[in-house]
Image 1: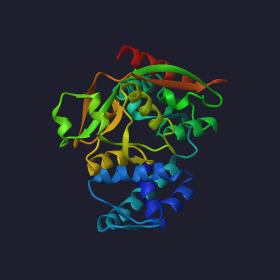
Image 2 (image 1 turned 90 degrees about the vertical axis):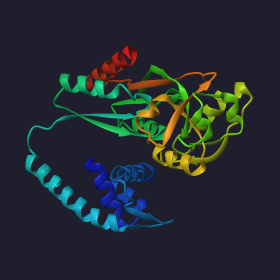
Image 3 (image 1 turned 30 degrees about the vertical axis):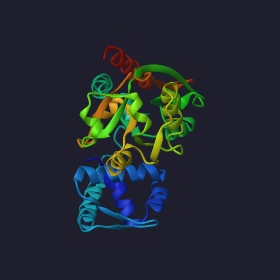
Image 4 (image 1 turned 45 degrees about the vertical axis):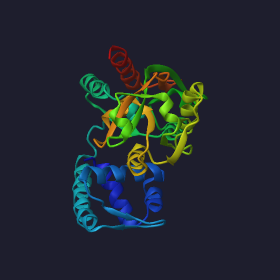
Amino acid sequence: MELRHLRYFVAVAAHGSFNRAAEILHITQPPLSRQVRDLEEELGVPLLLRGSNMVKLTEAGELFYEEAREVLARADEAVRRVRGEARQEVLRVGYAPSMIAGIMSAVLARFKSAAPRVRIELADLSSREIIEQAGKGLLDLVVSPGISVTKGIAGFQLTELRKVQPVLVLPGSHPLAKLKRVPVARLRTLPLVGLAKENYPEYVQSVRGLLKPFGISPRFVSLVNDGVSTLFAELVANDAGSILVEGIADIMPRSLVIRQLSPKLPSAPVVIGLPALDPSPHAEMFARILIEEARGS
């Protein structure tokens, strides 16, 4: 359990609103909502009752709120005690976890061994957030679906890192989950859940492009803005499918399954980006290790 999850939850609980908490924390509302949902999933209990403009604590949430405040207070005190000692350098990485699933742990281990004094800040960001934060100079390195940055990122040099295979994600109870491979033709009538344009501007366009050669127009019954945690819940609620990439298996719940499509859809590029001018040596090292792991996997 990460301290930032506790801090986000406490802020939302204290102010009774995701929007107000997001303003205080200087982040956007969708990733804040996503992080709190991740905390609830980790604990296995709902902490908040969500309304249209406000939230209330559940019984479990009230208990956890007091515990979380104490933990954060102790953590803040520890920070105050060590402040003034040699500060660590920070490497800020914005990425989509499913794009580099399976290799990230090896990359982190190698990097920490080579640069133990550098603190890595990993931010799970949507395509839009990656583009915006990189453009503002808030990231030192990015990893993103290639199609999301076809127009480029201001001030960043992009290189193809790897290709990933699109797959179909379904509830384990869905009839199509019984098949080892799902014929692409079955997508003609299958209700789909996807990622909304606001935070994932490339998603719908990409899926339409993948299915167009088969004469299929995807039938989306739900598009979500706050990431894959909500998408996973929507899949179960709608008994639907979703076109994602194979790396999603590392972060999806056990209630869902992955099925390959037949024939396979064209693989999708993943890009890595560094500032075009004067990238930090640590960002260059991290990128080099990431490329080596991706091409060796």
